Length: 370
Ligand code: FNR
Image 1: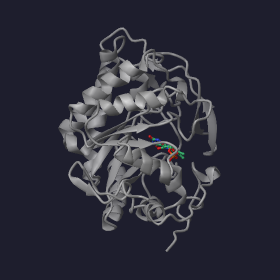
Image 2 (image 1 turned 180 degrees about the horizontal axis):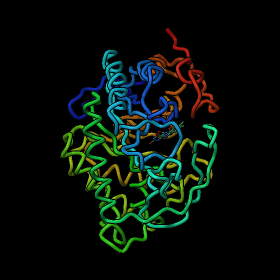
Image 3 (image 1 turned 90 degrees about the vertical axis):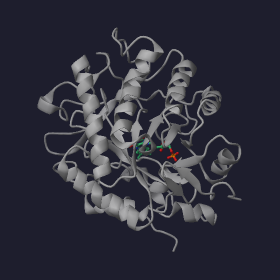
Image 4 (image 1 turned 60 degrees about the horizontal axis):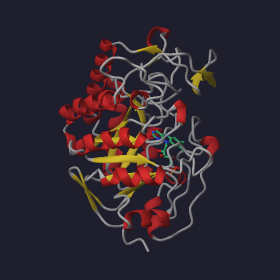
């Protein structure tokens, strides 16, 4: 039964035909030079336009916000034109698409930074992780992340303006809205989590201070494009890239209550809180309790992602745990995922070796049923 999955829902100014959304998925195939969406990227999104809502791959708001090879941006005129072709194709198919706005903060490398500078972060602390860089020969390679530089107050103000410009550009590119990426250990998450934020100014210390940058970004973006076109993605209790918080229930409870009063398009939470894992060693047993706690404190549309299948998605909607379910890996391999779920058809299996980078293989060649 998919009584709940195929119920329409109101989201911002849109009525979505059902509840099967496409999660944001970095595929590292932007056009070079310039990190500009290509005709191949347009085709990938066009194929998936039957999603209730597409959340685009994470898209850097500035050169400073890039941390991985070949990810797209939304800060140049060429990038806006590239994304315009994507949104036009999705709309021609009757779809709805939000652009995910990304600043990686410390999860970067001088090869991506203006003038080869050190990446920026709330605090100058070592980062446990690697990022995918471009080596001297133009090939992808894993690189160590250097200790970042601590952001100054004026550096923070520049980033707020970069978010404002990116949101304006996204709407100019025909996007229906923007999702602010505040999870997975990137800039906004680095400010939120006590592990990565040791600042002594108004952006560090108390929960209110650690949440300040996210809320300022939300307010700047909402002032620019309207709150009904703004969403936020969080990964509470995530451990990726050295995240960890001394009191996640309090920290994320505060954030969710603050978001609740801002009348956004939706709130998006990821469970379990690590990219691409399902209840592995990173799974925190408190997760289930925290998601219920956060759900109870948020009255708007709640989207959940992370390891869902047809049955668990239906169950989450039926129980009121979520209003919309976002599917990640299943959408990579099944462009027609909603139809397959509706008719309970077999799913193609995603090939992880072609997730990041490469060509059309494993990107726009997964077969549809019809
Ligand atoms: C991701 N994920 C992700 N999340 C995000 O907020 N922005 C992004 O750009 C990406 N990129 C990305 C790429 C790839 C290849 C994977 C597998 C995952 C996380 C993704 O949105 C989702 O939360 C997870 O994949 C869990 O959902 P599924 O795949 O179990 O349905």
